[in-house]
Image 1 (tube, rainbow, N blue to C red):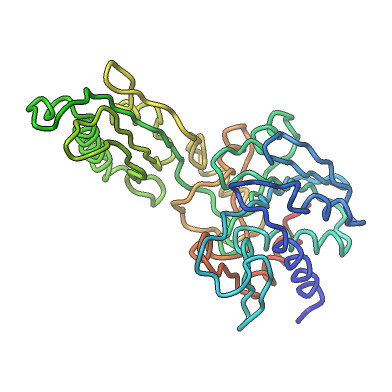
Image 2 (cartoon, rainbow, N blue to C red):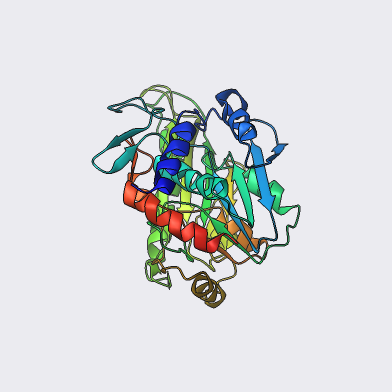
Length: 354
């Protein structure tokens, strides 16, 4: 094993040891910020945006590009064969919460800086997983003058320049309570209204099956949580569905919400959730292809998952997604990353951080 990789695993062990799960996003209590402040080879600038949302920025020299890595993770959940906050190395894999998404990339970057990287601009953020992105949005307001942005996510060390957007919301329905033996239950039941709305929304989503962009087809639509009713013999006076859509680049979020009738009226109420653009936000793919060529990275096919690169793209930056690990290994018990992925990422980050 090469010395860089040894040091990378040392930093990864430390990072995994901090419980930065989001929720509950207890970043300060986790010890992460104290640890980063203790490192003598970086001088982090800490910005507290409240509710556990911290930006940790450190820079040196005259860097051309910004690298953004989120250090929050999903909650550990059940099913782990080992302590999720203890790094385990087995069969050329590293196991631990966040190793793939995306503390592995952070460990690579800390390794390169400790070993003498001369020009860099790094933004560690802590609120990507909960659908807020306060950290990145607040940082963008500063209008930093970088030529491009690399957002770290598990892409198997390939450059992603195209992914879906995200739209979430809650559609509520109101009815009139009463005994279920009354035939007006057919029209006054809030759950019945929700069912009709859901059927229409699914048909709208299916009607976009022939839409495409750079290999991505259709819109992804999901009815995530449905709540309503009290008992089978009571007409439900309230019901709601929380849904999510993943539009293609170039598709209007407002138009799609109008198509599925996400609206408020006398017997329904729509509340927007997290809404963010696709990548690229403008639909201009050519400039990002040139950026990838400039960085000498392998180009990935489009992906379905959303990243904060789209927020940088929306703000006018050339933004791509790149990092070690496979997204298929993220967000599940016994999260892992191939050691070879970390080794390759060290070489790639050394080439592109400048």
